[in-house]
Length: 160
Length: 405
Image (cartoon, rainbow over all chains, first blue to last red):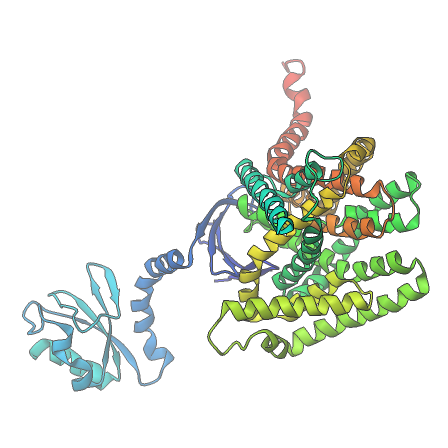
């Protein structure tokens, strides 16, 4: 995808691109950390139809909402990016010893060397779960590590 | 003691009034600059109330206002942005300056004010108000528009041109001779090139003069050092008769990165205060009775000023491959004049160029600071209506003609 970058002297930077549906959207990043989300007019491509000003915090939330599902896809691609490292998705079966228990209880990192980087529950991605995160049956755990390490985590969730 | 009391009362009254009218201006959605000028007119010579005790303070405050206006302008841009703008939009910048200086120069000659006044008036009509324009673009949600970078680049070139123009003007006003003038001009140009070079290659070293970017940010230190450095350089520049304002502008450009951002944040409220004082000061020194005789000239200049800026924007946007509507938007967005026209006129007034120049510049800015945002706001419906009429014309005979059968 082509993201066009334009400098706005005195204001900041602008990035814009065309969506597959033919609309153009962009983000104006101002010097003070504020962002403007702009959607271009369908008829006059030179002008903005809708412009939304976001604080630094709001744009973080928005990017998390938009970008989170990608984390899983990106992790699945990790093996291509870093040789020897894989991202594995492991589903917790209802019979798993850790269904209903805390992440900290698994001691997955110390026991296997792999890291649990995210959990997908009901199509929502919970990134960077903390030790007090409680697993439920049917959660999908995203694990990053060497192939041996990640399969050790899969065993861990299956048999304890 | 009595003196202090009257200074406080006068100053407090003026600032409070400015606050109130500034609030009204922002409610109505126009720039407060014309209101500050009117307030100055009301307080000053021949006005409703005259200020006595605080005049000296206001005068110094106004000078600091000019330094801060130019310093924060320099902080807005990095040297990279300036050179990039120059490289990309130089032809548009040249058209802008020539086309927009012409009405001012012409007016000075028509009124018989002479060559020096012509140089001044050229500057007054040429330089757009980047402050008003940036605010209008943000308020109207046009930062994403395709013509916006074009408009901003034209402003960048105007600001660079000012760095060359102000020393020329200062020299001209001080000596009235070309020989001494060209010496100070050489100094100014040398300084500009050096600062741009230093800002591009060694900006971290200059920046460290104000603050070490590695240590934790401290607003107090940034404020004192940035303001101190700017005043020092402005003072030295003034001694060399290169123009204090340009010195401050160059300091602003030389500072970069997070320190520039920090400096801009802490200096902005200070700039707003002293710039308001500066506009009031200009108004104070303009006799309201002298406004009516120049109103006709100011109106003609205002109309020409709108036309030449619209033409500039139209041309610059067309060069960038922007469609008709965007071209007119670019033109209308450039119309506003404000702080820099007053800065230029202020230099001439304190040098005593022509008694009518101050009133003419004041009324011109009164018109343009109000017309600019209005033009930017209403250019779209007006252009659309114009385009519709144009498109309808060829079809009129077909629909209005005799029935074909």
